[in-house]
Figure 1 (cartoon, rainbow, N blue to C red):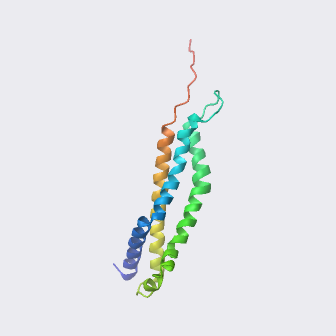
Figure 2 (cartoon, rainbow, N blue to C red; figure 1 turned 45 degrees about the vertical axis):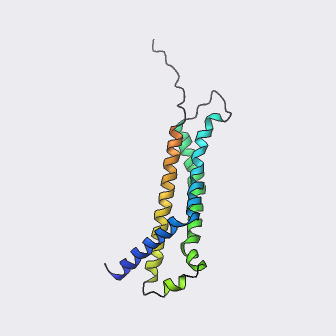
Length: 147
């Protein structure tokens, strides 16, 4: 493995260990799981008894409203600020940058770690949302008289 790849992998591993160890990441994961509670509350909310809500509609609306418009951009902002900001804040950036590693490999490794952590958080949250939607009662199918 050449020097650039070794620096990239070292930065990726350090970034993963850093992101997964932080309490901020755990808090963000708990907040991302909150939209999965909404489908569980739907049967208890007042609505017309003639109105049926399908599971697919609930899942589509939750993904469109929460994940595409809110969760994903907020995660990007949150972790982008953490990408290099923690090293600057803790004043370890000078030690990192004085090492003989290409800076682009260091930044790309951190970005790769950010991408892996965010993808894992969103995937786990979507799985929780899907399980919550599956817990919804099935809409009543009207009986058809074939005679």
